Length: 315
Image 1 (cartoon, rainbow, N blue to C red):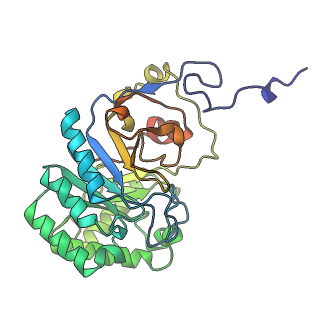
Image 2: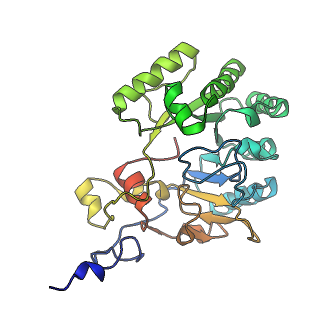
Image 3: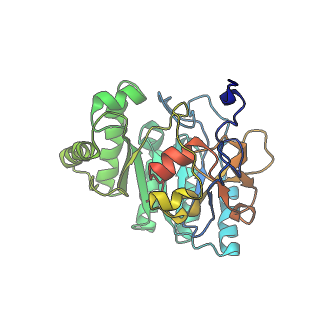
């Protein structure tokens, strides 16, 4: 008998159809709430499982500039997007020498600003600390640091980020606490414990350190599944929405886009998703107008992380 599997289409190859020939799910930008900027892939550390492969030497995504950020803020106004939040991710955002003026540009427009950081040495430089104190004073209640704390225990956190990283991150969080800056935390769900046990562990840590972070609130303590592309996941068809009891409006690309500056590119580009910075099929153009088109859920991360895992980078 002929082996048909050898000639069967591979998963996640056709933007319109699944490997079984079923119509692939698509997500419209129905309610843009967050515009993300990748500030650059350079980072002060190299994690064991960084989805974007950030490191002290990876500059595949260049530092975004204040001028570029201001241009996209102007485009938000022109397109009348109902954006509430501007998010900054990396790499480590505070490696970017323009991070303070970039943040201020967004804050001055009235947006909530969320900065994803490891709270280590780049954030702890005196000029950065001075800038954060000034911004927090000038725009009270508008600025939040989301700290990467992969696990509530030092042992597991350091497995991911290197020996001593947990202590250095807590040092930065202590400074943010004492300075009165708002904090949230991002962790991982890869440690073989239930979500309940994970949140209890974070709650103990926050109580011990006096951090005003609610471990039970998914917006303040975000727990992300591992993004392992080697794991076989189902493709998401149009029929899946009804089967799963979910709406396309609940998926991250219905409410957000991300701006990046690729090495070798003449200008910044807008991506459908924060999780797929290197996938060319998720690059939507250079303007927000171009980025308004629907997104085909044509990647394993779309299924495992967003639709089935229900994760979101925004609060």
